[in-house]
Every structure is written in C-alpha cells, then in structure tokens.
Image (cartoon, rainbow, N blue to C red; front, side, top):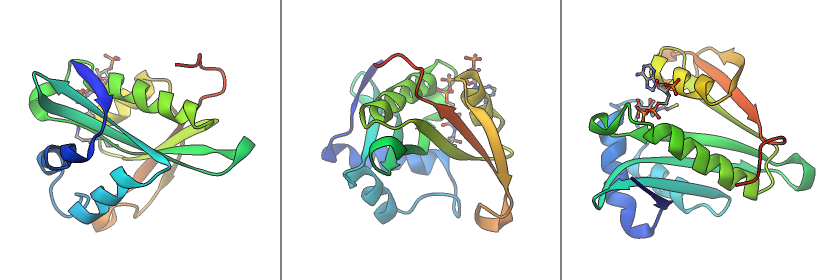
Length: 155
Ligand SMILES: CC(C)(COP(=O)(O)OP(=O)(O)OC[C@H]1O[C@@H](n2cnc3c(N)ncnc32)[C@H](O)[C@@H]1OP(=O)(O)O)[C@@H](O)C(=O)NCCC(=O)NCCS
C-alpha cells in the first residue's frame, strides 16, 4: 500500500470513495468535498494499491501559536479494502500533518452507531469527550473523540 498526499487529479477517484462509503443524505456534496481538499489549512492523505485509490483521510486545523486544534473531517476506505489497517495508517498520516501544523489536539465527530469507526479511534488512543444530539441529518447523534498530540513522537 502506498500512502501519499492528495493531488488535484485525484478528485474523481476520491469522490467515488465518498459515494461508495456514504449514502444520501449523509454524503458530503461534490462542491463541499472539493473545498475541503483545497483549503490551505488542511491535509488530505491517499491510500493507493496498484495505482487505484483505496481510501483517504482529511484533516484541517484552526487557531494560532499555542492554540492550534486539528479536526478530522473524514476517513474512508473502500469496502473491499477494509480490515487491513488502511484506516489506521491514514490516521497516523493525518495526525503527522496536524503535528507538523503545531496542533496540540486532534478531534472528530463520529456517528454514535458507527461501531467500526469508533473501534478504529479507540484503538488509536482517542478518548471520548462527549455526545451531540441531532448532529447528523435525520437527527442522528454524534460522539466527540479527541487525542492529545503533545506527547506523541514527531513523525
Ligand atoms: C471505519 C473505516 C474507515 C475503517 O477502515 P479499515 O481500513 O477497515 O480500518 P483498519 O483496518 O485500519 O482498522 C483499525 C482498527 O479499527 C477496527 N475496526 C475497523 N473497522 C471495524 C469494524 N467494522 N468492526 C470492528 N472493528 C473495526 C480494527 O479492528 C482495528 O482495530 P485493532 O487495531 O484493535 O484491530 C471503514 O470501515 C470505512 O471507511 N467506513 C465507512 C466510512 C466511515 O464511516 N468513516 C468514518 C467516518 S467518522
């Protein structure tokens, strides 16, 4: 598996993964996704096998100097590529980008019913920070998870 940063020509393959992973109304729109991958304070990592994209993850960050916080926008692996550590590796890459941007903490929302993703984050050292009702379309609740980046070795 090759892990590399996103390039503009990756967009269609990346969005095909979004369509494979999320149904409407839970899917990011094409325009919104393009904004996410193009904003300056963000990093998108791609997992690729034999030239085909298998998964991707997007992190962005806000704040200045001592107060930078990173947020995981999404992490997605094609159904055929799951269960082989791809998401764990993508997570490590986006955490590295967040550290390079001097983020002290990284956090995310996850659907309270998304057992696989919750397991992924807990296995990667994320702590549960709270719950937000009506976060998702159709009123679904989200759990908030976070992880300190301060004592992690720099990558
Ligand atoms: C969640 C998702 C990204 C996991 O991808 P993956 O490549 O299969 O995950 P990995 O193989 O790297 O697994 C990492 C850890 O999570 C666990 N895990 C991942 N999916 C799991 C599942 N469905 N059930 C139980 N555990 C799961 C693995 O067992 C592993 O834990 P371990 O190290 O203790 O064994 C993938 O299922 C996906 O793309 N889902 C749809 C999109 C989505 O919901 N994204 C999350 C948005 S918040």
